[in-house]
Length: 312
Ligand code: AKB
Image (tube, rainbow, N blue to C red; front, side, top):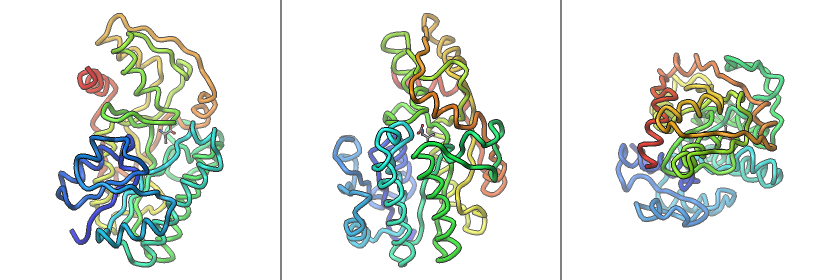
C-alpha cells in the first residue's frame, strides 16, 4: 500500500476497534491513530498516536504531510442524542471535518477516504420497513441532517473532482471494548453492562421500538471490505445502506434472559424515543450485498453471547 492511514476519532467506539484491525492488516507503523484527547489510554499506548482536532484544517494537513498519509478514516462525529443538545456544535463538527478531508483529497494530498453515514439520514416520511437505498430522506435530527448533507458532499466531490470517497450508513453498533457515546441506539450496549452489574436495566426507549443494529465485528468487516473493493465496484458514492439485524428492547431483553434468567427490564422513554421513532425499523441493503459482497454474520443471540462472555 502506498502511503499511510490516518484514523480521525480513533478513541471512539468504532475508531478504537478499527485501529486495531487496520494495524493487523497493514502493519503497526502504517496506521496513525488520532483524537482530540488522550482519554483512550490503551489506544494511546498501542502505537503511533497524534492529538488532532478534525475541525482544524491546518493541523490536519500538517499531520498528513508529516506521516505521508494517503488514506483517511474520518470517525469523529457528534451522534444523534448529543447533537440534539448542541445543534450548532454538531453541525460544525460533522460537516466541517468532512469538508476538510474532502478538500485534502481534491488537492491530491490524500487518495482515499472512508466517512460513515447513518440510518439517521432517514426520517418519519421514509418507508419504515425494508427501507430501500433510494427513498424519501427528510431527517428530523441535526445529526441526520449533517449526515444527509455529508452524503451529498461525498457524491459531489466524487463526480466533480474524482475523489475516491466510500461510505456506509451504519445502523446502531453493538460492542464491548469501548462504550458508545451520545447515540440513540446506545441502549443496546448499556443493557449488557447493567445486566451483568445489577441484573436489571431501565431502558430509555419503549419495549416495541424496533431499530436496525449490527455487531462491531460485522461493522469493522464492512468498513474494511468497502475500502478494499475495486473502485469500479463502488457504484454508490453517497453512502450504502447496510443491514445486520433488527430488534426491539423487549427482544434483546429476552435474549439476555436466556443467559441470565433473573434479568429484568423496565421502560422509561425519554427524548430519545422521538429520535428512534423517526428512524427505520429495518433496512434493505441489496446494493451493498451485490456490489461488494457484503454479508453479516451475527444474529441477536450470537451478539448476546459475545457481549456477556467478554464483559464478564
Ligand atoms: C446514533 O444512535 O446516533 C448512532 C447512529 C444510528 O448513527 N448510533
